[in-house]
Length: 331
Image (tube, rainbow, N blue to C red; front, side, top):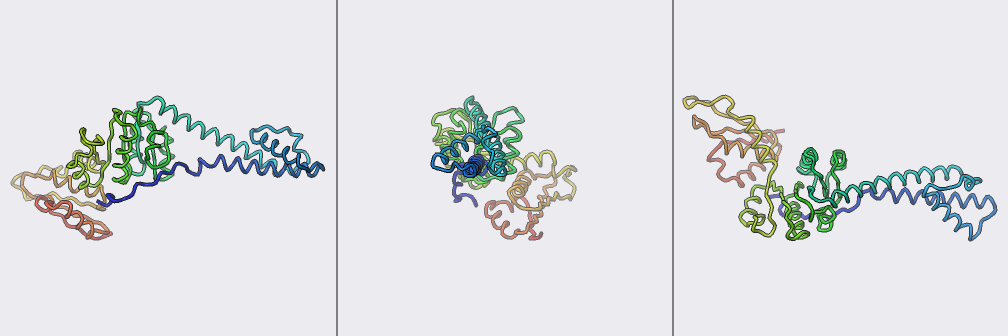
C-alpha cells in the first residue's frame, strides 16, 4: 500500500498557456508605448500630455486599431513587433475564451461525465467516453502535456488542477451523471470522491473510484466507506485486475486441453512485476485449476524481484498453497 499516506496533489489552477495572453499583451503594450514616445520625441512634442497620448495610442493598437499616420516618424521595428504581438494576443485570447465557453456549455447542460486525472486510467476512460458520444470534463492534476493535448483533441474539456471542491464545482459535478476518479494515486482518488460528495450533497450522480492496492480495496470494503449506505457511495474498480481477467479469458493458459492422465504443467512467465504483472499472476492463480491437478508454475523476471517477492508474499500469504512461483532478479 505504497500510496496510502501520499498527500493529495495541490491544486494547480493555471498553466503557462493560460498566462500567455497576458504576457503577449503586456509586451505589445510596452513596445508600442516606447515606440510612440520615441515618435513624439522625434516630432518635438515630448511633454506630460505626450505620455498620456502614448498610453491611449498603445491601448488602441492593442485592440488592433491604429491609423497608419500615427506611426510616422517612429521606430518601425518596434511598431511592427507591437502589431504582431497584438494580433497574437487577439488570437490567443479568442482561443482561451473559446475553450472557456465550450467548458461552460458542457457544464451548463449537465448530464456529462467528470473524470479526475489523466495520468492513470483516466485518459483511456476519457477517450472511451468520447467515442460513445458522452460529453467529458477532466480535472487533471499532474499528467503530461501530451496527455492533455490528446484529451483535448478528441473533444474532452480539461481543467488543470487537483480535484479540490471548487474545481469539482467548476466541472459541474452537481449536474454530472458520472464521476470517475482514476488518477495514479489511490489516496487522491479516495479524496476526489469524498470531496465530490461534499460539493454536491444528495445529488444522484454515480461515482467510480479506482483503487490499485488490493489490501486497500479490502480495507475500504470492510469499513463500508463506499457502500450505498456509507458516507461516500461509490463503486470500486481496478483496471489492472479487469484487464488481467480479460487477458486470461481471451488467451487461456491451458489453450491445449490438459487431460487427467497427463503430466503436463501449465507455465506462466511474467516479465516486469508492476501492478499489471501482479494482477496477471494473481488472476492466473485464481483460475488455474487443471484436470491433472498439477499446480500452475510461474516465473517472474524483474529488476527488483527480491523486494517485490517479499511484498507480494506478504500481501498474498496463501499464494503458495495454490501455485508455485520463482522470482528471478534479472534485467
